[in-house]
Amino acid sequence: MDDITLLDAVERYIRGAMNPEERLYFENMRKTRPEVDQLVVEHTLFLQQMNRFGERKKFRDTLQHIHTDLAEQGRINSPKLKGKAKVAYIWKKYKRVVAIAACIAGITAIGISALVWSISPKPDMQEIQALGRKLDDVREDQNKTKADVKELKDQIISGQPEQFIPRSGGTGFLIDGSGLMITNAHIVRHSRNIRVVNSQGKQFKAFVVRLDVPRDIAIIKIDDNQFKPITSLPYGFRRTPSELAEPIFTLGFPRDSIVYGEGYLSSRSGHNGDSLSCQIAVPANPGNSGGPVFNQAGEVIGILSSKEIAAEGVVFAVQSKYIYKAIEEIKKGNAEYNNVKISSRSSMVGYNRKQQVQKIENFVFMVKGDGRP
Amino acid sequence: MKPEINESALLNGLARNDRKAVEAIYRDNFNTIQALIINNNGSAEDAKDVFQEAMIVLYEKVCSERFELNCQIKTYLYSVCRRLWLKRLQQQNRFSPAAESFEATIPVVEDLDVHEQRNAEFEMMDKAIGNLGEPCKTLLEAYYIQKRTMQEIAVNFGYTNADNAKNQKYKCLMRLKKIFFSHYKNGNSDG
Image (cartoon, rainbow over all chains, first blue to last red; front, side):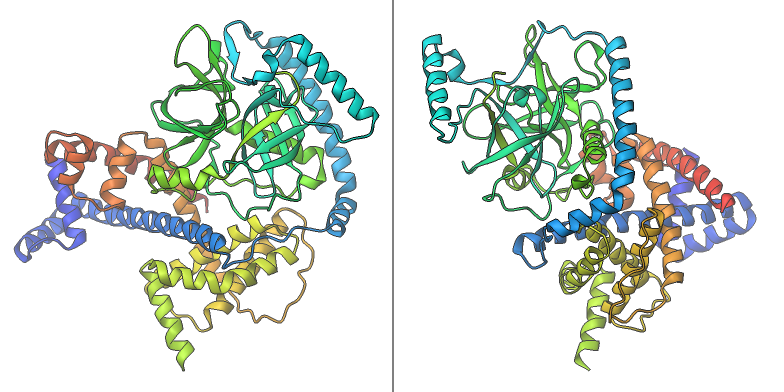
């Protein structure tokens, strides 16, 4: 208890909050007791460090807010898209490096996947239900499907454009301004054509950049003239694991409009101790798959992927650090993505939930594919 | 005359972390820096990083006691960004001689040395606070950074009275200081 009072006195002394008599008494004590003097010196240094730390943190937040606001108002330039010439230039410059890197990456990838395949426990498919949405079309009877196929064949033969019939669906969200998105592999795995729809109902074409079936991560890219690149995303991506009991929220498309859900992180590992994922408690339905899981600061901490059939409210999400890994992989594979950089900082720290969701909403998409889930 | 008065007003605002002043400086300078970075092998994201770091350098300079700026804000930010970006290019081993431009630059090496020291200290504190865990982290941040009073904290964190909160704060503080100073002393003896 004595130590606490002493420290309290030291803090008041440093802040200059003592009255003159007290101050005099304290200064005398400093002279007579070297350990008190030592404590004052050390604590002054510490408080100075703490203050600087706090100020810089605050200032950094201000900068983030300003950047997002100015970009939204169009007061600062949005990034210019690079033309073909630049790509060709970069390609020429890094051709050898890319070739070597690709070889190494290929060999490593094969090696690692073989290793993982041999040692990882086989997931019990009966117990987990992938939350891909079986669209109504799938349940249609066989005759209808046959008719569709026939119709499609006729169209292809007669040279007309293919009609897009959605058979699987889920959620996805942007990871950078150029239109790269992340979603679950099980949604787009068997699809040849993919469409994404934003919360305003606009539809864009997209294609698969990378599939990682064991981790259930897919990177897709919007490839549509209608899509305007975005300067910067309001949310960041967390590299480190999150704390237990941390409040979280999700956005997804279990039906045709966007749906918000709220919950908490309930375990750092997934089904049967799977260390790729984590367990969250949040309402989730088929179609929520591939949706982002955010913490309070507006950082993405995971990708919602599956839920346990036997128990209610047990939902699993792939941890966000694997997003970084996936990005590294596509960079190794293709020089075009060398400039992709995702931010670990959210610009929504301190916003309330309504404002955060308003900001995020536009960057979460419904993903539809024409392959069966 | 007028621009100079305006500049010192902006710098004063910056020192207070005044949103309007910071925004004005940001708006007036960001595009130039973005052009510099993009023309020299960088991306828009790099431009944002470098510019914001330069803003921090300027902010910390303005906050220090012996502050004096002998040139325009524009020139200073440009010089710092140029230096920071060249350094990053060198680290990534893809240095190509920067396209010369007509913007004036001033030497900023000393300021950047100070900044690097500050960076290291910031990382140390960040790491130390990160190692602390909850509820210590939030408790200490509330008291020392958001400068809330012990009474408020007691209410918010659900302690029965301010003395209990104080007790808890003391324990947390002792742990934080121990972690921080162990890094701090190591860091300083290395350098």
